[in-house]
Amino acid sequence: MKTLVSLASAARKRAEYRRTLAELDALPAKVKADLDLDHDRACALARDAIYG
Image (cartoon, rainbow, N blue to C red; front, side, top):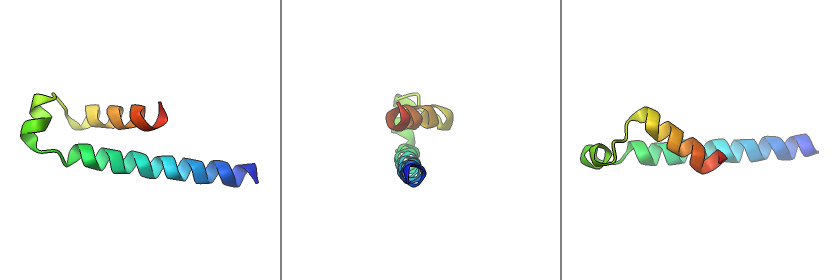
């Protein structure tokens, strides 16, 4: 049972990560430039936000 709970939790976190990354990638180019945000940095920010 714990394995199913762990898998469900991992799936939820992965979905949150993908959603967060999509939101960061969808920012206007000017905002990204102001924040010095490229795709690699967006990935790192999303990962830190969701996984800690």
